[in-house]
Picture 1: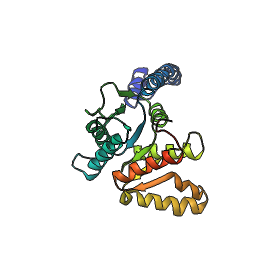
Picture 2: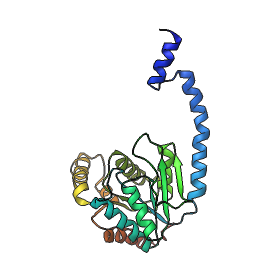
Picture 3: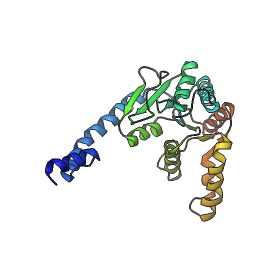
Picture 4: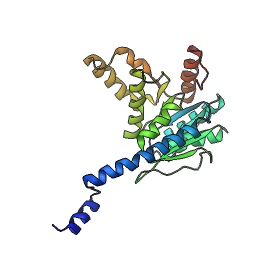
Length: 236
């Protein structure tokens, strides 16, 4: 195979030589640092916020979309802003509800080859773009006073279990993690309870890290009860 043919094949399959990998890794450090610095500087000013996660594929006429919008609106009436992944679907609904309630509306967008694009309900000065999922996840964890998890796919599960793991291992302080939609989440919750607990891979008390609810009133009640119980202001 000629060098030219080899290069074309590597370009086709996005393959790199070992030297190219090492060089790109070194330069990536600066991009990663820049994303952390910008995220820390801009999000440190947003005030108390709750993150809302869920599927980017949820359409505007779906019940979950409307529920997410109502949850976000209700949170603004209790003094919280809303942080989402900045894209369509449930993320758009969350920002839309915050916008309707005249509350803080933050979007942490990620560059993807499909699905993801900024929604129009993010505050103009509170839209951030990320190349790296792990940097974006740090921002969600660091600057959120609670996670509201709507029905979603792998990305939603990733954020959910990342937060549970960090709280379980005491790498971060405890905050409310709320699964919205008992019908959607009950199968997963029952599997965790009847398989992971029984097999001893988690402790029974780990189930207390999660709340299952069905509406916006329950979401706000869980968050308000948590901060009242621990005598904390929302932006501790």
